Image (tube, rainbow, N blue to C red; front, side):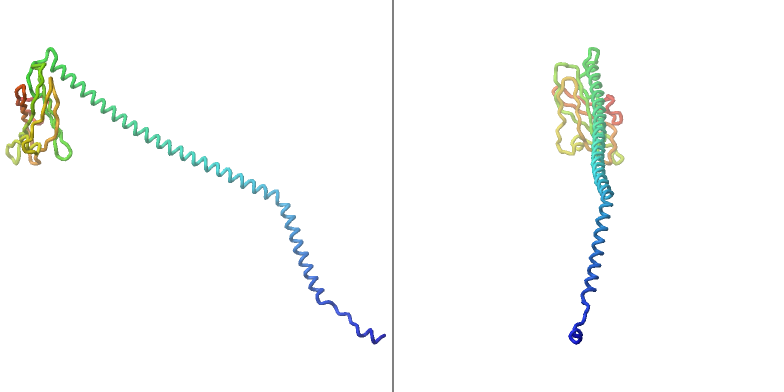
Length: 241
């Protein structure tokens, strides 16, 4: 009996220590999960408030952005409207100034016409009332001549006007004729046709080395002719000779 029992020995299992360690690790992991769940539950109300605050902040930021865009658009519209209003005001002022000049010119023409055809006006045949010059860009001169007649009030005067500019060139007296003034050979005279008065205008070219002093105007037409000389400096004063 003794001999048979001695053949059996108690040998500890090698895997019992490893299983114990695995169990301990699982318990530790489970504790971490439990702690995380508990922490999540405890932090959930505050996290929800943070999320809600962030959502509200984004919503308010979007509203502010839209309001800013609307305000910028209003500013652009108002600036554009102000520019248009200023431009319209400037154009209106220029138009009113031009109308005032036109009205003043018409009043002058009416007064001149009344003096010409009035009952007390002096009867006078075809003549040049005035001629005046103004410089233009490019070296040309713009002229304006006024022709009149009230001797025969029922007749229409028709014909052509030419003029010659007299002055000094290279220290000598010189005359610039109609063809040279227009820079065209055999240039025709400027036609006129009127009952009481007419205004003729155009542009002529004077040589650069020429100093004008007088203007000699020649009219030729069906009602006869006329020739008058005007001082260049006082042209337009009606002081023809």
